[in-house]
Image: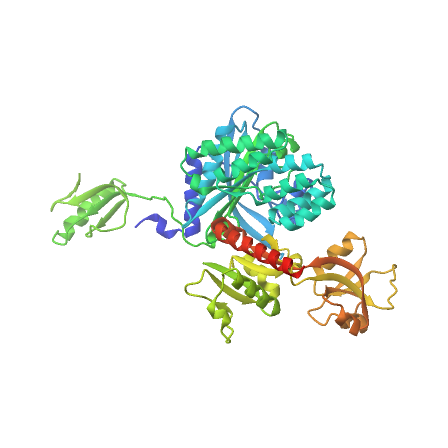
Length: 373
Length: 213
Protein backbone atom coordinates (compact mmCIF):
# COMPACT_ATOMS: atom_id res chain seq x y z
CA UNK A 1 0.00 0.00 0.00
CA UNK A 2 1.55 3.24 -1.10
CA UNK A 3 1.76 6.26 1.15
CA UNK A 4 0.19 8.25 -1.68
CA UNK A 5 -3.16 6.64 -0.90
CA UNK A 6 -3.53 8.84 2.16
CA UNK A 7 -3.07 12.09 0.26
CA UNK A 8 -5.82 14.01 -1.50
CA UNK A 9 -5.51 14.67 -5.24
CA UNK A 10 -4.56 18.27 -4.53
CA UNK A 11 -1.82 17.30 -2.09
CA UNK A 12 -0.46 14.86 -4.62
CA UNK A 13 -0.51 17.53 -7.32
CA UNK A 14 1.44 19.90 -5.06
CA UNK A 15 3.98 17.17 -4.32
CA UNK A 16 4.40 16.37 -8.01
CA UNK A 17 4.90 20.05 -8.81
CA UNK A 18 7.44 20.45 -6.02
CA UNK A 19 9.32 17.46 -7.35
CA UNK A 20 9.24 18.99 -10.82
CA UNK A 21 10.53 22.39 -9.72
CA UNK A 22 13.17 20.96 -7.42
CA UNK A 23 14.24 18.69 -10.24
CA UNK A 24 15.14 21.85 -12.15
CA UNK A 25 17.16 23.16 -9.27
CA UNK A 26 14.56 25.57 -7.89
CA UNK A 27 14.70 26.35 -4.19
CA UNK A 28 11.60 26.95 -2.10
CA UNK A 29 11.30 30.58 -1.04
CA UNK A 30 10.35 30.86 2.62
CA UNK A 31 7.83 33.54 3.44
CA UNK A 32 5.67 35.11 6.09
CA UNK A 33 1.92 35.36 5.65
CA UNK A 34 1.95 39.14 5.86
CA UNK A 35 3.82 42.14 4.52
CA UNK A 36 3.78 45.87 5.12
CA UNK A 37 0.67 47.41 3.60
CA UNK A 38 2.74 50.06 1.79
CA UNK A 39 4.19 47.46 -0.56
CA UNK A 40 0.73 46.87 -2.01
CA UNK A 41 -0.32 50.48 -1.91
CA UNK A 42 2.65 51.47 -4.07
CA UNK A 43 2.07 48.65 -6.53
CA UNK A 44 -1.69 48.58 -6.64
CA UNK A 45 -1.95 48.06 -10.38
CA UNK A 46 0.22 44.93 -10.15
CA UNK A 47 -2.46 43.19 -8.10
CA UNK A 48 -5.31 41.32 -9.75
CA UNK A 49 -7.72 42.13 -6.95
CA UNK A 50 -7.37 45.66 -5.63
CA UNK A 51 -8.64 45.16 -2.10
CA UNK A 52 -6.21 43.95 0.53
CA UNK A 53 -6.91 42.53 3.97
CA UNK A 54 -5.11 44.82 6.39
CA UNK A 55 -4.48 44.97 10.14
CA UNK A 56 -2.23 46.90 12.52
CA UNK A 57 0.70 45.15 14.16
CA UNK A 58 1.98 45.62 17.74
CA UNK A 59 3.76 48.87 16.86
CA UNK A 60 0.76 50.40 15.11
CA UNK A 61 2.17 49.76 11.68
CA UNK A 62 -0.34 48.85 8.96
CA UNK A 63 0.22 45.33 7.70
CA UNK A 64 -1.53 43.22 5.04
CA UNK A 65 -2.16 39.55 4.47
CA UNK A 66 -0.35 38.75 1.22
CA UNK A 67 -2.59 39.14 -1.84
CA UNK A 68 0.35 38.27 -4.07
CA UNK A 69 3.67 36.44 -3.79
CA UNK A 70 5.77 37.87 -6.63
CA UNK A 71 6.02 41.31 -4.99
CA UNK A 72 7.35 39.78 -1.77
CA UNK A 73 9.91 37.67 -3.62
CA UNK A 74 11.14 40.64 -5.64
CA UNK A 75 11.29 42.81 -2.53
CA UNK A 76 13.48 40.32 -0.68
CA UNK A 77 15.58 39.35 -3.68
CA UNK A 78 19.29 39.98 -3.44
CA UNK A 79 20.23 38.50 -6.77
CA UNK A 80 22.40 40.64 -9.04
CA UNK A 81 23.10 40.17 -12.71
CA UNK A 82 25.48 37.27 -12.10
CA UNK A 83 23.66 33.97 -12.73
CA UNK A 84 20.00 33.16 -12.14
CA UNK A 85 18.30 32.52 -8.83
CA UNK A 86 15.61 29.88 -9.34
CA UNK A 87 12.83 29.99 -6.79
CA UNK A 88 9.49 28.35 -6.29
CA UNK A 89 6.79 28.92 -3.67
CA UNK A 90 3.63 27.36 -2.31
CA UNK A 91 1.72 29.99 -0.42
CA UNK A 92 -1.75 31.07 0.52
CA UNK A 93 -2.78 34.40 -0.91
CA UNK A 94 -5.78 36.42 0.23
CA UNK A 95 -7.89 37.91 -2.52
CA UNK A 96 -11.32 39.24 -3.07
CA UNK A 97 -13.38 36.99 -5.27
CA UNK A 98 -14.55 38.65 -8.47
CA UNK A 99 -18.01 37.11 -8.20
CA UNK A 100 -19.19 37.65 -4.63
CA UNK A 101 -16.59 40.17 -3.35
CA UNK A 102 -15.79 38.04 -0.29
CA UNK A 103 -12.17 37.49 0.68
CA UNK A 104 -10.82 34.07 -0.13
CA UNK A 105 -7.74 32.15 0.83
CA UNK A 106 -6.29 30.75 -2.37
CA UNK A 107 -3.38 28.37 -2.53
CA UNK A 108 -0.91 29.37 -5.16
CA UNK A 109 2.18 27.65 -6.44
CA UNK A 110 4.64 29.33 -8.73
CA UNK A 111 8.13 29.75 -10.07
CA UNK A 112 10.27 32.90 -10.29
CA UNK A 113 13.65 33.24 -12.00
CA UNK A 114 15.59 36.33 -10.98
CA UNK A 115 18.95 37.63 -12.17
CA UNK A 116 20.40 37.37 -15.63
CA UNK A 117 17.38 35.90 -17.43
CA UNK A 118 18.84 34.83 -20.76
CA UNK A 119 17.38 32.85 -23.64
CA UNK A 120 17.94 29.55 -21.86
CA UNK A 121 16.29 30.69 -18.63
CA UNK A 122 13.26 31.96 -20.56
CA UNK A 123 12.96 28.65 -22.38
CA UNK A 124 13.25 26.74 -19.12
CA UNK A 125 10.47 28.74 -17.45
CA UNK A 126 8.15 28.08 -20.41
CA UNK A 127 9.13 24.43 -20.25
CA UNK A 128 8.26 24.28 -16.55
CA UNK A 129 4.92 25.97 -17.25
CA UNK A 130 4.10 23.39 -19.93
CA UNK A 131 5.14 20.49 -17.72
CA UNK A 132 3.09 21.83 -14.82
CA UNK A 133 -0.02 21.68 -16.98
CA UNK A 134 0.81 18.29 -18.47
CA UNK A 135 -0.39 16.65 -15.24
CA UNK A 136 -3.96 17.50 -16.17
CA UNK A 137 -6.05 15.06 -18.16
CA UNK A 138 -7.02 16.14 -21.63
CA UNK A 139 -5.66 18.98 -23.65
CA UNK A 140 -3.59 21.91 -22.46
CA UNK A 141 -2.18 24.93 -24.25
CA UNK A 142 0.08 27.79 -23.37
CA UNK A 143 -0.84 31.06 -25.05
CA UNK A 144 2.20 33.26 -25.48
CA UNK A 145 2.35 36.94 -26.35
CA UNK A 146 4.92 39.73 -26.15
CA UNK A 147 4.26 43.13 -24.60
CA UNK A 148 6.73 44.75 -27.02
CA UNK A 149 4.35 44.20 -29.90
CA UNK A 150 1.39 46.04 -28.45
CA UNK A 151 3.72 48.54 -26.75
CA UNK A 152 5.44 49.34 -30.04
CA UNK A 153 2.11 49.79 -31.76
CA UNK A 154 0.86 52.13 -29.04
CA UNK A 155 3.98 54.24 -29.33
CA UNK A 156 3.82 54.32 -33.11
CA UNK A 157 0.20 55.42 -33.13
CA UNK A 158 0.87 58.20 -30.61
CA UNK A 159 -1.92 57.04 -28.33
CA UNK A 160 -2.29 59.13 -25.18
CA UNK A 161 -1.35 57.43 -21.91
CA UNK A 162 -4.83 57.66 -20.41
CA UNK A 163 -6.33 55.69 -23.30
CA UNK A 164 -3.96 52.72 -22.76
CA UNK A 165 -6.06 51.02 -20.13
CA UNK A 166 -9.22 51.11 -22.24
CA UNK A 167 -7.31 49.88 -25.31
CA UNK A 168 -5.84 47.01 -23.28
CA UNK A 169 -9.27 46.05 -22.02
CA UNK A 170 -10.72 45.89 -25.54
CA UNK A 171 -7.71 43.94 -26.83
CA UNK A 172 -8.06 41.36 -24.07
CA UNK A 173 -11.74 40.94 -25.05
CA UNK A 174 -10.75 40.56 -28.73
CA UNK A 175 -13.31 43.30 -29.25
CA UNK A 176 -12.34 44.56 -32.71
CA UNK A 177 -15.50 46.56 -33.40
CA UNK A 178 -15.28 48.79 -30.33
CA UNK A 179 -11.49 49.11 -30.53
CA UNK A 180 -11.83 50.47 -34.06
CA UNK A 181 -14.28 53.20 -33.09
CA UNK A 182 -12.24 54.11 -30.00
CA UNK A 183 -8.96 54.42 -31.92
CA UNK A 184 -10.49 56.50 -34.70
CA UNK A 185 -12.05 58.78 -32.07
CA UNK A 186 -8.61 59.20 -30.47
CA UNK A 187 -7.19 60.31 -33.80
CA UNK A 188 -5.21 57.17 -34.61
CA UNK A 189 -4.57 56.80 -38.35
CA UNK A 190 -6.49 54.24 -40.41
CA UNK A 191 -3.26 52.37 -41.10
CA UNK A 192 -2.42 51.93 -37.43
CA UNK A 193 -6.03 51.11 -36.54
CA UNK A 194 -5.86 48.25 -39.05
CA UNK A 195 -2.65 47.10 -37.39
CA UNK A 196 -4.36 47.01 -33.99
CA UNK A 197 -7.24 45.03 -35.45
CA UNK A 198 -4.89 42.48 -36.98
CA UNK A 199 -2.95 42.23 -33.71
CA UNK A 200 -6.04 41.39 -31.72
CA UNK A 201 -7.26 38.71 -34.08
CA UNK A 202 -3.83 37.10 -34.45
CA UNK A 203 -3.90 33.79 -32.65
CA UNK A 204 -3.04 30.22 -33.47
CA UNK A 205 -0.04 28.02 -34.02
CA UNK A 206 3.27 29.91 -33.97
CA UNK A 207 3.96 29.25 -37.65
CA UNK A 208 0.64 30.76 -38.67
CA UNK A 209 1.05 33.77 -36.46
CA UNK A 210 4.72 34.69 -36.71
CA UNK A 211 4.71 35.72 -40.38
CA UNK A 212 1.72 37.96 -39.93
CA UNK A 213 3.23 39.42 -36.76
CA UNK A 214 6.37 40.33 -38.66
CA UNK A 215 4.23 42.45 -41.00
CA UNK A 216 2.80 44.28 -37.97
CA UNK A 217 6.16 45.22 -36.55
CA UNK A 218 6.44 48.90 -37.35
CA UNK A 219 9.24 50.09 -35.10
CA UNK A 220 12.35 48.96 -33.27
CA UNK A 221 10.49 47.76 -30.17
CA UNK A 222 7.97 45.61 -32.01
CA UNK A 223 10.57 44.20 -34.39
CA UNK A 224 12.61 43.07 -31.41
CA UNK A 225 9.51 41.47 -29.88
CA UNK A 226 8.82 39.42 -33.02
CA UNK A 227 12.49 38.39 -33.13
CA UNK A 228 12.36 37.26 -29.52
CA UNK A 229 9.21 35.20 -30.15
CA UNK A 230 10.77 33.61 -33.23
CA UNK A 231 13.86 32.67 -31.22
CA UNK A 232 11.76 31.33 -28.36
CA UNK A 233 9.68 29.18 -30.68
CA UNK A 234 12.82 27.81 -32.31
CA UNK A 235 14.20 26.91 -28.87
CA UNK A 236 10.95 25.32 -27.68
CA UNK A 237 10.71 23.08 -30.75
CA UNK A 238 13.65 21.19 -29.29
CA UNK A 239 11.40 20.14 -26.38
CA UNK A 240 8.90 18.63 -28.81
CA UNK A 241 6.03 20.33 -27.01
CA UNK A 242 5.11 22.73 -29.83
CA UNK A 243 1.63 21.22 -30.16
CA UNK A 244 0.85 22.83 -26.84
CA UNK A 245 2.05 26.31 -27.76
CA UNK A 246 -0.07 29.00 -29.35
CA UNK A 247 0.69 32.63 -29.92
CA UNK A 248 -2.14 34.99 -29.05
CA UNK A 249 -1.57 38.72 -28.96
CA UNK A 250 -4.78 39.50 -27.11
CA UNK A 251 -3.02 38.65 -23.84
CA UNK A 252 -2.13 41.85 -22.08
CA UNK A 253 -0.53 42.59 -18.76
CA UNK A 254 0.18 45.93 -17.13
CA UNK A 255 2.97 47.67 -19.08
CA UNK A 256 4.14 49.37 -15.93
CA UNK A 257 5.48 46.00 -14.74
CA UNK A 258 5.69 43.60 -17.66
CA UNK A 259 7.91 44.18 -20.65
CA UNK A 260 8.68 40.99 -22.56
CA UNK A 261 6.99 37.67 -23.00
CA UNK A 262 3.65 37.14 -21.24
CA UNK A 263 1.69 33.90 -21.19
CA UNK A 264 -1.49 32.20 -19.97
CA UNK A 265 -2.18 28.49 -19.63
CA UNK A 266 -5.49 26.78 -20.36
CA UNK A 267 -6.56 23.17 -19.80
CA UNK A 268 -9.68 21.67 -21.31
CA UNK A 269 -12.39 21.46 -18.68
CA UNK A 270 -11.39 24.61 -16.80
CA UNK A 271 -13.30 27.69 -17.99
CA UNK A 272 -10.58 30.17 -17.06
CA UNK A 273 -6.81 30.39 -17.34
CA UNK A 274 -5.10 28.11 -14.79
CA UNK A 275 -1.64 29.59 -15.22
CA UNK A 276 -0.44 33.11 -15.73
CA UNK A 277 3.02 34.57 -16.04
CA UNK A 278 5.45 36.80 -17.80
CA UNK A 279 8.64 38.77 -17.80
CA UNK A 280 8.71 41.65 -15.34
CA UNK A 281 12.01 43.53 -15.63
CA UNK A 282 10.11 46.79 -15.11
CA UNK A 283 8.84 45.60 -11.74
CA UNK A 284 12.43 44.75 -10.76
CA UNK A 285 13.59 48.24 -11.76
CA UNK A 286 10.66 49.82 -9.94
CA UNK A 287 11.64 47.97 -6.76
CA UNK A 288 15.24 49.14 -7.15
CA UNK A 289 16.71 45.78 -8.17
CA UNK A 290 19.35 45.56 -10.84
CA UNK A 291 18.24 42.26 -12.36
CA UNK A 292 15.68 40.70 -14.69
CA UNK A 293 12.73 38.61 -13.61
CA UNK A 294 10.38 36.06 -15.16
CA UNK A 295 7.93 33.72 -13.53
CA UNK A 296 4.46 32.23 -13.41
CA UNK A 297 1.81 31.18 -10.94
CA UNK A 298 -0.57 28.23 -11.08
CA UNK A 299 -4.06 28.72 -9.69
CA UNK A 300 -4.63 25.60 -7.64
CA UNK A 301 -8.27 26.51 -6.98
CA UNK A 302 -9.01 26.47 -10.72
CA UNK A 303 -7.08 23.23 -11.14
CA UNK A 304 -8.83 21.52 -8.29
CA UNK A 305 -12.18 21.81 -9.97
CA UNK A 306 -10.78 19.34 -12.51
CA UNK A 307 -10.62 16.61 -9.86
CA UNK A 308 -8.19 14.05 -11.19
CA UNK A 309 -4.63 14.41 -12.41
CA UNK A 310 -2.07 12.21 -14.10
CA UNK A 311 0.81 12.42 -11.71
CA UNK A 312 4.23 10.96 -12.21
CA UNK A 313 4.48 10.38 -8.48
CA UNK A 314 6.07 7.14 -7.42
CA UNK A 315 6.27 6.03 -3.86
CA UNK A 316 7.88 2.64 -4.24
CA UNK A 317 8.43 0.20 -1.42
CA UNK A 318 11.84 -1.40 -1.14
CA UNK A 319 10.69 -4.96 -1.60
CA UNK A 320 7.62 -6.56 -3.13
CA UNK A 321 7.57 -10.04 -1.57
CA UNK A 322 5.27 -12.72 -3.00
CA UNK A 323 4.47 -16.15 -1.61
CA UNK A 324 2.14 -18.87 -2.81
CA UNK A 325 -0.93 -20.12 -0.95
CA UNK A 326 0.76 -23.50 -0.37
CA UNK A 327 3.56 -21.90 1.64
CA UNK A 328 3.73 -22.29 5.40
CA UNK A 329 2.36 -19.05 6.79
CA UNK A 330 4.50 -19.18 9.94
CA UNK A 331 7.67 -19.39 7.86
CA UNK A 332 6.49 -16.54 5.59
CA UNK A 333 5.78 -14.39 8.63
CA UNK A 334 9.11 -15.15 10.19
CA UNK A 335 11.02 -14.27 7.07
CA UNK A 336 8.97 -11.15 6.45
CA UNK A 337 9.97 -10.07 9.96
CA UNK A 338 13.62 -10.72 9.09
CA UNK A 339 13.33 -8.33 6.13
CA UNK A 340 11.52 -5.76 8.24
CA UNK A 341 14.26 -5.91 10.82
CA UNK A 342 16.54 -4.31 8.23
CA UNK A 343 14.14 -1.35 8.32
CA UNK A 344 13.17 -2.11 4.75
CA UNK A 345 9.72 -1.23 3.47
CA UNK A 346 8.22 -4.56 2.51
CA UNK A 347 4.95 -5.33 0.79
CA UNK A 348 4.03 -9.00 1.24
CA UNK A 349 1.31 -10.54 -0.90
CA UNK A 350 0.21 -13.82 -2.42
CA UNK A 351 -1.07 -12.13 -5.58
CA UNK A 352 1.30 -11.44 -8.46
CA UNK A 353 -1.00 -8.78 -9.81
CA UNK A 354 -0.80 -5.95 -7.31
CA UNK A 355 -0.40 -2.30 -8.20
CA UNK A 356 2.67 -1.62 -6.12
CA UNK A 357 5.90 -0.03 -7.25
CA UNK A 358 8.96 -1.68 -5.76
CA UNK A 359 12.69 -1.36 -6.18
CA UNK A 360 13.14 -5.16 -5.86
CA UNK A 361 10.96 -8.20 -6.22
CA UNK A 362 11.39 -11.20 -3.88
CA UNK A 363 9.69 -14.60 -4.01
CA UNK A 364 9.27 -17.18 -1.24
CA UNK A 365 11.12 -20.43 -2.04
CA UNK A 366 9.58 -22.54 0.75
CA UNK A 367 12.18 -21.47 3.31
CA UNK A 368 12.87 -17.81 2.74
CA UNK A 369 12.38 -14.87 0.37
CA UNK A 370 14.93 -14.68 -2.43
CA UNK A 371 15.35 -11.99 -5.03
CA UNK A 372 13.84 -12.59 -8.45
CA UNK A 373 16.06 -11.62 -11.37
CA UNK B 1 -19.96 19.92 -30.11
CA UNK B 2 -20.45 23.54 -29.12
CA UNK B 3 -22.81 24.76 -26.42
CA UNK B 4 -24.57 27.99 -27.37
CA UNK B 5 -26.32 30.10 -24.75
CA UNK B 6 -29.22 32.13 -26.10
CA UNK B 7 -31.45 34.61 -24.28
CA UNK B 8 -35.01 33.34 -23.88
CA UNK B 9 -37.59 35.42 -25.72
CA UNK B 10 -37.72 37.61 -28.79
CA UNK B 11 -33.99 38.27 -29.11
CA UNK B 12 -33.24 34.57 -28.72
CA UNK B 13 -35.68 33.62 -31.49
CA UNK B 14 -34.09 36.15 -33.78
CA UNK B 15 -30.61 34.87 -33.00
CA UNK B 16 -31.66 31.25 -33.51
CA UNK B 17 -33.06 32.10 -36.94
CA UNK B 18 -29.74 33.69 -37.82
CA UNK B 19 -27.83 30.58 -36.65
CA UNK B 20 -30.22 28.45 -38.69
CA UNK B 21 -29.53 30.52 -41.78
CA UNK B 22 -25.81 29.91 -41.50
CA UNK B 23 -26.32 26.17 -41.15
CA UNK B 24 -26.44 25.60 -37.40
CA UNK B 25 -30.03 24.44 -37.04
CA UNK B 26 -31.33 22.19 -34.32
CA UNK B 27 -34.48 20.17 -34.86
CA UNK B 28 -35.37 20.24 -31.19
CA UNK B 29 -35.62 24.06 -31.34
CA UNK B 30 -38.44 23.86 -33.88
CA UNK B 31 -40.66 21.72 -31.65
CA UNK B 32 -43.37 23.53 -29.80
CA UNK B 33 -42.60 22.06 -26.34
CA UNK B 34 -39.83 24.38 -25.34
CA UNK B 35 -37.21 22.65 -23.25
CA UNK B 36 -34.28 24.62 -21.88
CA UNK B 37 -31.49 22.43 -23.21
CA UNK B 38 -31.87 21.48 -26.84
CA UNK B 39 -29.57 18.85 -28.22
CA UNK B 40 -29.49 17.64 -31.76
CA UNK B 41 -27.89 14.19 -31.97
CA UNK B 42 -26.31 14.82 -35.37
CA UNK B 43 -26.03 18.60 -35.14
CA UNK B 44 -22.83 20.51 -34.42
CA UNK B 45 -24.31 22.62 -31.64
CA UNK B 46 -26.66 22.43 -28.67
CA UNK B 47 -28.61 25.40 -27.51
CA UNK B 48 -29.29 26.47 -23.94
CA UNK B 49 -32.13 28.89 -23.41
CA UNK B 50 -31.43 31.03 -20.36
CA UNK B 51 -32.53 34.31 -18.83
CA UNK B 52 -31.02 37.16 -20.91
CA UNK B 53 -29.09 38.56 -17.98
CA UNK B 54 -27.53 35.11 -17.31
CA UNK B 55 -26.13 34.42 -20.79
CA UNK B 56 -22.78 36.02 -20.06
CA UNK B 57 -22.48 34.11 -16.77
CA UNK B 58 -23.01 30.74 -18.51
CA UNK B 59 -20.34 31.65 -21.03
CA UNK B 60 -17.86 33.06 -18.51
CA UNK B 61 -18.03 29.90 -16.40
CA UNK B 62 -17.77 27.60 -19.39
CA UNK B 63 -21.25 26.03 -19.19
CA UNK B 64 -21.67 27.42 -22.69
CA UNK B 65 -18.83 27.96 -25.19
CA UNK B 66 -20.44 30.83 -27.00
CA UNK B 67 -23.52 33.01 -26.64
CA UNK B 68 -25.37 36.07 -27.76
CA UNK B 69 -26.12 38.80 -25.26
CA UNK B 70 -27.04 42.48 -25.11
CA UNK B 71 -24.20 44.94 -24.52
CA UNK B 72 -26.11 46.27 -21.50
CA UNK B 73 -25.79 42.90 -19.75
CA UNK B 74 -22.09 42.63 -20.60
CA UNK B 75 -21.31 46.11 -19.26
CA UNK B 76 -23.29 45.58 -16.08
CA UNK B 77 -21.81 42.14 -15.40
CA UNK B 78 -18.24 43.01 -16.38
CA UNK B 79 -17.82 39.38 -17.45
CA UNK B 80 -14.41 38.11 -18.49
CA UNK B 81 -15.23 36.81 -21.97
CA UNK B 82 -14.20 37.50 -25.56
CA UNK B 83 -16.57 39.88 -27.34
CA UNK B 84 -16.09 38.83 -30.94
CA UNK B 85 -18.77 40.55 -32.94
CA UNK B 86 -21.37 43.29 -32.85
CA UNK B 87 -24.42 41.65 -34.41
CA UNK B 88 -26.00 45.04 -35.04
CA UNK B 89 -29.53 44.08 -34.04
CA UNK B 90 -31.50 44.35 -30.82
CA UNK B 91 -30.48 48.00 -31.08
CA UNK B 92 -31.45 50.45 -28.38
CA UNK B 93 -29.69 52.95 -26.13
CA UNK B 94 -28.83 53.23 -22.50
CA UNK B 95 -30.11 56.63 -21.43
CA UNK B 96 -30.89 58.84 -18.47
CA UNK B 97 -34.54 59.86 -18.42
CA UNK B 98 -36.46 62.25 -16.17
CA UNK B 99 -39.96 63.75 -15.88
CA UNK B 100 -40.55 66.31 -18.63
CA UNK B 101 -40.54 69.25 -16.19
CA UNK B 102 -37.59 68.01 -14.08
CA UNK B 103 -35.29 70.69 -12.63
CA UNK B 104 -32.02 69.30 -11.29
CA UNK B 105 -30.89 70.43 -7.85
CA UNK B 106 -27.09 70.49 -8.01
CA UNK B 107 -26.81 70.94 -4.23
CA UNK B 108 -27.64 67.33 -3.36
CA UNK B 109 -26.84 63.90 -4.80
CA UNK B 110 -28.98 62.88 -7.74
CA UNK B 111 -31.26 59.94 -6.91
CA UNK B 112 -31.06 57.40 -9.75
CA UNK B 113 -33.36 54.39 -10.07
CA UNK B 114 -32.01 51.69 -12.33
CA UNK B 115 -31.60 48.01 -13.13
CA UNK B 116 -27.99 48.84 -14.04
CA UNK B 117 -26.21 50.25 -10.95
CA UNK B 118 -22.75 49.54 -12.34
CA UNK B 119 -23.32 51.36 -15.63
CA UNK B 120 -25.04 54.25 -13.83
CA UNK B 121 -22.17 54.67 -11.33
CA UNK B 122 -19.60 54.64 -14.10
CA UNK B 123 -21.48 57.21 -16.15
CA UNK B 124 -22.00 59.69 -13.28
CA UNK B 125 -18.42 59.18 -12.08
CA UNK B 126 -17.30 60.20 -15.54
CA UNK B 127 -19.18 63.51 -15.30
CA UNK B 128 -18.31 64.03 -11.60
CA UNK B 129 -21.89 63.96 -10.38
CA UNK B 130 -22.58 62.47 -6.97
CA UNK B 131 -25.48 60.03 -7.02
CA UNK B 132 -27.53 57.77 -4.84
CA UNK B 133 -28.38 54.53 -6.64
CA UNK B 134 -31.72 52.83 -6.09
CA UNK B 135 -31.57 49.35 -7.56
CA UNK B 136 -34.90 48.18 -8.99
CA UNK B 137 -35.73 45.02 -10.92
CA UNK B 138 -38.56 46.25 -13.14
CA UNK B 139 -41.05 49.05 -13.93
CA UNK B 140 -38.26 51.57 -13.51
CA UNK B 141 -40.44 54.30 -15.06
CA UNK B 142 -42.58 54.35 -11.93
CA UNK B 143 -39.76 55.55 -9.68
CA UNK B 144 -39.67 59.28 -10.62
CA UNK B 145 -43.48 59.45 -10.83
CA UNK B 146 -43.83 58.26 -7.26
CA UNK B 147 -40.95 60.41 -6.05
CA UNK B 148 -38.71 57.41 -5.35
CA UNK B 149 -35.97 58.89 -7.52
CA UNK B 150 -35.14 62.01 -9.53
CA UNK B 151 -34.14 60.26 -12.73
CA UNK B 152 -33.83 56.76 -14.15
CA UNK B 153 -31.12 55.03 -16.13
CA UNK B 154 -32.55 52.37 -18.41
CA UNK B 155 -32.58 51.01 -21.92
CA UNK B 156 -34.75 52.95 -24.32
CA UNK B 157 -35.95 51.42 -27.56
CA UNK B 158 -38.57 53.70 -29.08
CA UNK B 159 -39.26 55.98 -26.15
CA UNK B 160 -42.98 55.16 -26.15
CA UNK B 161 -43.04 53.75 -22.62
CA UNK B 162 -41.18 56.83 -21.38
CA UNK B 163 -43.66 59.17 -23.05
CA UNK B 164 -46.66 57.31 -21.67
CA UNK B 165 -45.24 57.88 -18.20
CA UNK B 166 -44.43 61.54 -18.75
CA UNK B 167 -40.68 60.98 -18.99
CA UNK B 168 -38.15 62.24 -21.49
CA UNK B 169 -34.58 61.25 -22.38
CA UNK B 170 -32.18 63.80 -20.84
CA UNK B 171 -28.83 62.30 -21.81
CA UNK B 172 -27.78 59.32 -23.87
CA UNK B 173 -25.21 57.15 -22.16
CA UNK B 174 -24.33 54.62 -24.82
CA UNK B 175 -25.70 52.63 -27.73
CA UNK B 176 -26.65 48.99 -27.09
CA UNK B 177 -26.88 46.03 -29.44
CA UNK B 178 -26.53 42.25 -29.37
CA UNK B 179 -22.99 40.87 -29.15
CA UNK B 180 -21.51 37.49 -30.02
CA UNK B 181 -19.35 36.32 -27.10
CA UNK B 182 -17.09 33.33 -26.38
CA UNK B 183 -15.56 31.67 -23.35
CA UNK B 184 -11.81 32.32 -23.16
CA UNK B 185 -10.78 28.70 -22.64
CA UNK B 186 -13.19 27.35 -25.28
CA UNK B 187 -11.55 29.69 -27.75
CA UNK B 188 -8.26 27.86 -27.19
CA UNK B 189 -9.62 24.40 -27.89
CA UNK B 190 -12.44 25.06 -30.37
CA UNK B 191 -11.16 28.15 -32.16
CA UNK B 192 -11.70 26.90 -35.72
CA UNK B 193 -15.39 26.21 -35.13
CA UNK B 194 -16.01 29.44 -33.22
CA UNK B 195 -14.22 31.51 -35.85
CA UNK B 196 -16.27 29.75 -38.54
CA UNK B 197 -19.51 30.76 -36.84
CA UNK B 198 -18.20 34.29 -36.34
CA UNK B 199 -17.29 34.69 -39.99
CA UNK B 200 -20.62 33.28 -41.19
CA UNK B 201 -22.57 35.51 -38.80
CA UNK B 202 -20.64 38.57 -39.96
CA UNK B 203 -21.33 37.70 -43.59
CA UNK B 204 -25.04 37.09 -42.95
CA UNK B 205 -25.39 40.42 -41.16
CA UNK B 206 -23.61 42.29 -43.91
CA UNK B 207 -25.86 40.71 -46.50
CA UNK B 208 -28.93 41.79 -44.56
CA UNK B 209 -27.62 45.33 -44.17
CA UNK B 210 -27.12 45.39 -47.95
CA UNK B 211 -30.71 44.26 -48.58
CA UNK B 212 -32.10 47.04 -46.41
CA UNK B 213 -30.26 49.69 -48.39
